[in-house]
Image 1: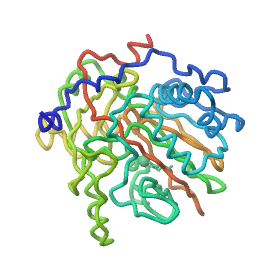
Image 2: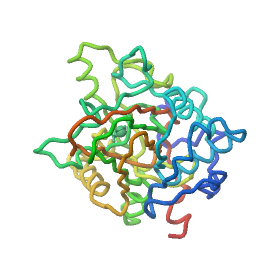
Image 3: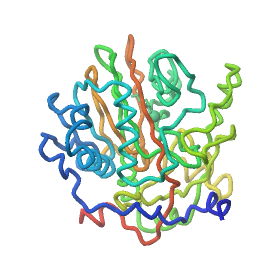
Image 4: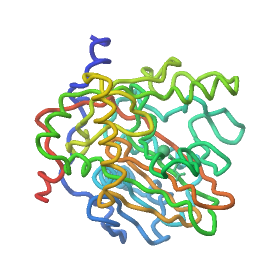
Length: 344
Ligand SMILES: O=C(O)CCC(=O)C(=O)O
Ligand SMILES: [Fe+2]
């Protein structure tokens, strides 16, 4: 049973994960906020809206649960000039998914090649202009769009939420872009949507395996779930997944990690994936671009978005990221698209 489950994308959601009704702000409506674009991104612009206070509020479970719902609906949510420290950032990362009803075995992700450091633990990724993901995918000879990805989809149980706080930013540049996986699905023709709904894709993190070998460091294991073990760093997921919180369908292949559509021939797979990666990168009506201020925080949902940093700046850009583990991706054939539910 366990083995069959680990290979089937057509799973039902964990029992306690019930699609939330459409009310993206809920108890958070007491704070000023606005949508950055129609399809993706909501911002809380006031620095008086502090996540640290939300975590301590008497109704904090309600507020954090509503924040999870909001992030799942809007893809990414921005908070200005936050005083949240790394311990509280980890607490928020843990509570978001827990309050949304994820499996009890899902914890914060431990990156395959993050190192245990005295001041930060293995479940925090340091995002640094000195190298790695923030500078990833860019060179003079490559398009900037090469950097579009969804975090850690090579894990059998990938991420639900991610929280990034940048404490050091360049004077200009280093913006981050997100794209909506819901809108990526909705923009396809019904025939293309149907074609993709039957398919699964192989996600591969072997770049990290290579990197670990070069550095002579082991691959961390396990990585936030008892199912995220070993040094293989590969997983098969449905190409279209149903989001357990919103119930919406989302495109779930990304340029960073998806290497193969399992059911197609090699050439067919390469062409379809290339089309889908361009679909995400070139439709700027499904993008939001965020210009950081010092200590701003972005919280995104890795089940229904893609993102990319922009490597256009000089100087230091540093921050800490917490990625939490969600549930095994599934496709529910009776689920609906975001546009169908919202009447768009
Ligand atoms: O540096 C950024 O803006 C984003 C880096 C990234 O991909 C991540 O934190 O997951
Ligand atoms: Fe990322």
